[in-house]
Length: 339
Ligand SMILES: C[S@@+](CC[C@H](N)C(=O)[O-])C[C@H]1O[C@@H](n2cnc3c(N)ncnc32)[C@H](O)[C@@H]1O
Image (cartoon, rainbow, N blue to C red; front, side, top):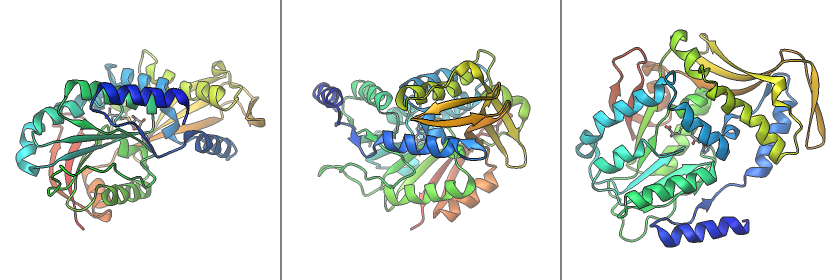
């Protein structure tokens, strides 16, 4: 652990009811391995997890504010409507565990509505951003114990101990908003939901937001906004590689592309090379043809039928759902662990 990281943790813990970040994951070796391996493939690709360094998380927050990006607005509206009903629906939950928590902005709706909550465990890979979000929540909800965990949630990770006072007979409540599940192929999404079930434990529930939109007229602008914020989010990956992996990308040689694949039911994000050229990263050379792309993100839009089949395969059953009545069909599901 770097000294400044320890210092920031100590200061945070002293000032707020926040435990030090639990570093369950070492970023650098995995980032390097994924980038070098992905750039070597026939279809170049880099997993979307690496879009989220501190700058990437800030840019994602900006995306949620652009007019074209409907998912955040739609899901927030659904959560505001369902939050008052949630307490009677699940009752007595002590721990809220958020998967890919980002700014934790939507979480505030749940924290305000669920009187029984004693602790909040936000889990995210973007450690600086997670630390700042956790401090803000601890300040605004002083009776809550906030226990941030830095982890790759696709890998098994342990929840911090809830302590002796925790009343956990109702199980943990997982919260997985933002349609982040759509970043995973169907098989990977089933594996992830099964793994989350094991992490959350017996009697747990999962409140999960899933986008179902298939209308390209909504989708393309949402992932390629006029102000260029999503383009900047995508191109920031090249800056990150330059900064952290001795990369020599010139971002002017690439442009952002959002592409709808109706057969797979997904939006893809790519970085398109504007010309034939070579780039060095960590001492290795990668050749790009003109028009060749690096595939950087998938956003699957799972229909309710498709999603519920996947949830069932991962041992979750649906207790309730709330669907947007407008053009998006965005749905929030309350799932209960079967085993
Ligand atoms: C689409 S954003 C959603 C943010 C927020 N939950 C929301 O609804 O606005 C995805 C979040 O998950 C985090 N993330 C993505 N992949 C991750 C992974 N494999 N492990 C941990 N965090 C991840 C990102 O850092 C980011 O904060």
